[in-house]
Image (cartoon, rainbow, N blue to C red; front, side, top):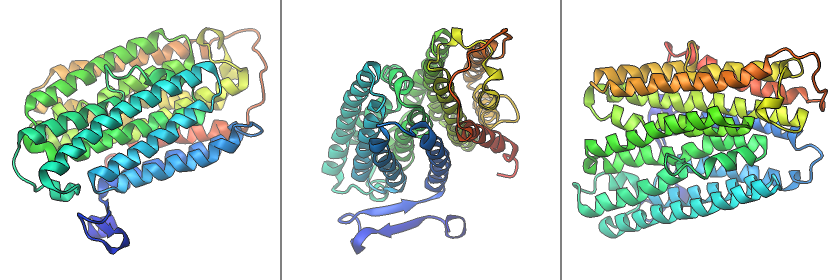
Length: 421
């Protein structure tokens, strides 16, 4: 319907804005809903086997569906207060899912995640209050035509952006993400990394394009880009030093989030905006599939061997060939090699950087890809090494291996279908 009719709008209960709640869907909303459905559906099949026979399964399923509903509501919300409500519902369900690991590290990580989330919500809500006080409406559409830049608009943007950056785990507010994602149950880690952190990024993009663009100067975009650059380097170096496989993948998420925020400086000039936004959105979709795949593959390793200590995983490809192949295929996209979706995203970024005369971002993108190659092949050097004997471990349900492989293939399909898109 969006392809045929353009944007879709619905007045909940028949009440018109600004009194009522409005739902809104455009191409970006539909794409985010679609990628969420793919990743969550695959992770659901994986979770059925992962939680089979575990006491935590009784709590997992209602929280899981709650998180899915909150994501859908967030991508369809058309006013800044409902975005706050859905973001808080999403965060509360995510924190509870992290705590399902029922380990000391997992509970500590969940508590840290909760406190950071509450701080981010408060900052965002203060910005909402400022906008409502100044304009008398919460509707994004109405705020977009509220008037020229003003001190209250700039202050609201600073508060809301700070809260969303904290929730997105952009450097230096990334400290909560690695322990939360590394200690959560595997299907939860996959969805947190692939989708939940992108919900805050999605809101920031909406606000940037539809409300705050008049009050944003190029230096703000460059500052956000610099934070992204530090995230790429810091996250990659920490992934290279990580002792556990899931911790390696979690730090990789910090690096990949840094790439997402390069979209703001790269789109700051009119001649590069379209290319930069295309690259950023391609990055969102390819990263969602690839990162979910590697987290699910890492969870399969833990299920089979009871741990994910990298230095003790020599030769596991003989025991888990499908999972290791899924990790390898997804790793190609995370590195940014052809013909993956990650390659298309980085290629568009490079084109935008060169066309806009911002060559320094090209150096960062290439350096980040080299570091990603290093930490992924660090794990492969163990997993694909030859050892005379390998621990037998627990049997692994086939669905756990093949769902990870299916998501990795999706990341490749995104690259192969790019010319048609």
